Length: 260
Image (spheres, rainbow, N blue to C red):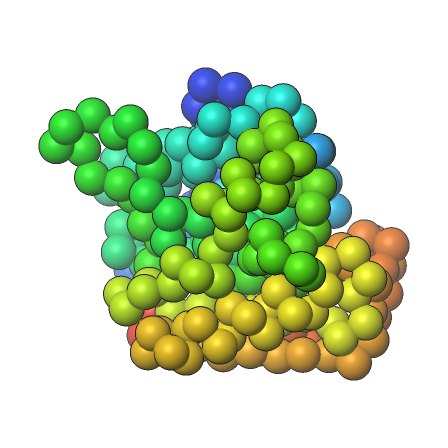
């Protein structure tokens, strides 16, 4: 495995690349999963970064982890610009890295799930004329922040806007911005999540269905917020909810029509 680190303004992209081999010609190019940890736009969770990337590496994918701007740095659309830069960087280097440029998935958790979904449905202001916004080819969302409405994780929207004004938060509410053409979505959540209520994912699934967007959803009865891969390593052993990863990996193979 080769690791590359890119500085993207204030953000850091760590890329984990499976090594090519002449004896494995069928794996000369692989899809990549960009992991976006959560943290309420206040911090970037280590528990939802490297442990997740390693799991996707074991499934045969390249992987990357984005550490994006948080706190006051999250204002002014900066995290969305950073994930756009990350997707652009991966695709620009696809030939050198052995990445399938049309098979780049984003896997986000909590506020990182919000950022992942934002990359698919929000339009980034201020792009230079003629420069297309980068969009993911598939989305895997774990207990994502979605709505700025009654079931909001309010702190995420306060940090994005720097304001307590709920009207300002609506620009970053996502359930009303789902449209046809959004890439396929896999989403999972626990029913008793006390931090980001499950209604966030329920609203998302309803919106995806109305727009005709391909979606697979799993709702587990129990588990605290921030489960990540649901193991003792990340301090959240939850054997039943841990099935989300195998389900997501199988789903992504079907979406990308890619198997080794």
